Length: 349
Image 1 (cartoon, rainbow, N blue to C red):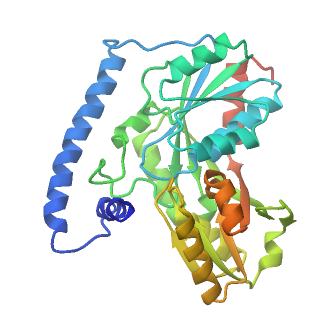
Image 2 (tube, rainbow, N blue to C red; image 1 turned 45 degrees about the horizontal axis):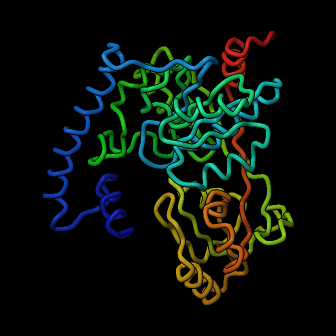
């Protein structure tokens, strides 16, 4: 199943070239046209109030993305919730919960926030209210495509490493919405800005300015905190690992960013195992990773925190790897976000 999914992912990224790809691409283009028609119609029905939106009793911040795959949206949601907590306000993070790893990661990193998981975010918010939990503001995770809830601000997260793929809608490309949707964003968050050249970043910002002249831009990167042992939680400075031979495995949306981070700290990756985003590991797969890593002369096995939370007990028992802990940091434009938050929360600057 994973090999089939990977094949179609490569087709969508224009990286698959074989005798049957031409026919499949034509079919995918037709499917993308139908998908686009459905997306536009669905959004139009809500914008024209044919279908009603639901309003919560507190402000709602929507955080979403345009593309299929990792953009750094969850780390930004975590950053935003932490920032709200710093002002002694309680955020409710409403997440669909495509995979339990993201919800577990949020719960672990945000002990003072309320985490609500479920496809029907309005119903989840109502349940939180019935449980008498105090909430000051809601963060609608993956909210760009969620039309049911009224929001006070739309924030769109864009991965600087692969902003819009080939510019086509899924399944022909990686876009979940047409690029014109960016016009609805008040703030656009650029992630992984340290992993692209200044020229690439400038071109991306110019393109976004053309597509969404009204939006303010914020630049962010993933700041590596430390490595920790899965079983004991003992921390190790990443700098101390320079020159070490390591094997890595990850099932994240942008595995390239994981590898680039390790390269920056001069770790030598002798074997790298990549799986599709949200992949559920089987014990046999982890044992294979262990065997191949040993044969390749790897001194350590490293994975991401997101992967660790997805299969914590199994990964600890089978591999006991080092886990890379990282946190999103805003490097430009933080005052833009602070100003909007202050207004929504009624905080005096």
